[in-house]
Image (cartoon, rainbow, N blue to C red; front, side, top):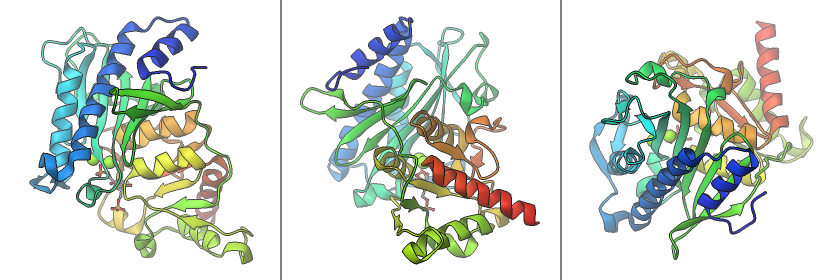
Length: 341
Ligand SMILES: O=P(O)(O)OC[C@H]1O[C@](O)(COP(=O)(O)O)[C@@H](O)[C@@H]1O
Ligand SMILES: [Mg+2]
Ligand SMILES: [Mg+2]
């Protein structure tokens, strides 16, 4: 295992050696990801001084109001990732369709799907935000299409996020555990600070936006009511609640100390004809891979997230992920609720 203090580049090279695979190309790709994250980290840190706060005055393909930083983050990331020549195309929350890297196919062997800025509503209040990314292979030598991105999460070769908070941290998996790196601005490097991250199996902390409780379906209602009943309830212990308003902040906390994160299907989403709030390809899948690689579980309530065969680029899914015992409990409540029907 790599030692604390190892740089991200050294870590990737060491991992490649340990797996008997030189992975030079992949090292370059992750270096580009790291460069993009460093550039974004600087912009987020400067905030209004860099003129990046506030609304952009337009909506993205999903009808959500875009912040200036959503658009800037998308551009900065793409610009950094275009250079390596290893990507065939990029898909983003902020773009209707995929973006084929000019002049790069059939050379590019990988596809990158990403959420340039997760937690957009936190930007203007100096709250935690992040970038989430997922990398899959592009095996077809022809020009990439949207359909090439529609690969189940279990096909991801790398997933991760960069959290922009009091420290900026890059947390990644290449399918051999999860490692966390903290950005040392004095040397401009991500340094390994959290090797082999594991999510504790048990937890007494949950994360869900409780302002939607009136819309919840029976399983989540039951789960949260039982947690809130504390020592006197069926769980016989007290629970704590946290909601960062940014999935990246909630998942980071869960990777650090355990917990369960839920953005489940509810009556309001159902009535609006939506299949969930969070996006499969660049939110649920990469976070699901990280959580599973750290020993947790990632589910919709009826299906393992990483087994979903995607049908569209911006597909939404219900998300229940984190400490294994708690996710199993919510899934069991779903099974019991559907058995009653
Ligand atoms: O405002 P709500 O409904 O609590 O939603 C919060 C969720 O929405 C998100 O902000 C969606 O991500 P974006 O900011 O990238 O659209 C998640 O990060 C977060 O968990
Ligand atoms: Mg997001
Ligand atoms: Mg976003």
